[in-house]
Amino acid sequence: MDVSLPVALGMGMAILLLILPNKLYMREPMGKHEIVEVLQQDRKTIWKQFEERLVKSRSGWGVNQYVTLSFLLGIASFGVSSQILQSWWMALPALLAGIMFTERLVSVWGARRKDEFEAGNVKAIRLMASSLRTSPSYLHAFEQVAASPFLSEIVLEEYRRIVELLRAQVPLEHVMNRFFERTGSADVKYLATIVHIQREMGGDMAKTLDLAASSILRRRQSLRRQKAAMAQIVAQVNLLSVMPFVFVIALYVNNPNHFDPLTATMGGRFLILASLASILIGGEAIRYVAHKSISRGA
Image 1: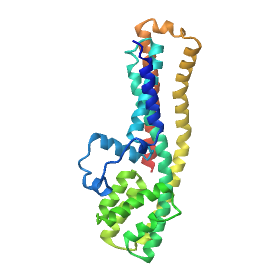
Image 2: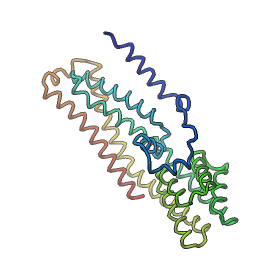
Image 3: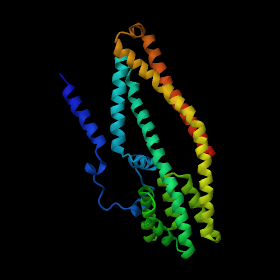
Image 4: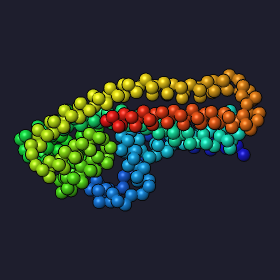
């Protein structure tokens, strides 16, 4: 039975779902509200937790896009590995490579959007400080930020949610905790701590926020220097991780029988599989260590 047509149709639909915006094929549940999420935050399914993880990554990806791209990359990795190893069951671990590649894309895109948010959040904190000098109301300060034309949309969206919750009489401490859970930003955690201590101890909040903004800027400058120092190492790791696969695919395309001496025995096939897996795992381990080093410095 020829299954090429169903497989082609399935992959075509997967690609279509990947590139289409979520709103064209997904409908938000009726009555879903930010306040409901606060009330139901202790009753979350695994699927919902995964969705919130993607939101926290700030990559702009949805669950459907993540699953679709992981499937496509996994199938591509499986196809190439099965051709080289000449064994479909030995190529099964290559399906997991789709998740690894997708995670890498999510982290890269999320890091860019997170940098954009944190840069705009410093401006938002200064706007809050200016507003608190004229009015001691937190709600008024957040409203001024949410309506500012000088901030990017990614920052305005988060502060609009804060205003919506405060107007619904949700305690400020819970609002700030939700703010940190959504963004995962160390700057937001710092801001939440300042707001909590100031409400307990009192003091000049406007001056405190100005000092906080200056402190965040200094921390971001230090973080940029650390990233610059690690950038060369990470770039070398990325290059060394990609080049072996490029060489293997190029050799196979040029001569499909090039790997026959290795694939002639089961031991040779295991050696190829172990080599490719070691390259991927080693690259991810170095990236993880570099990321943790930067995070500790932050």
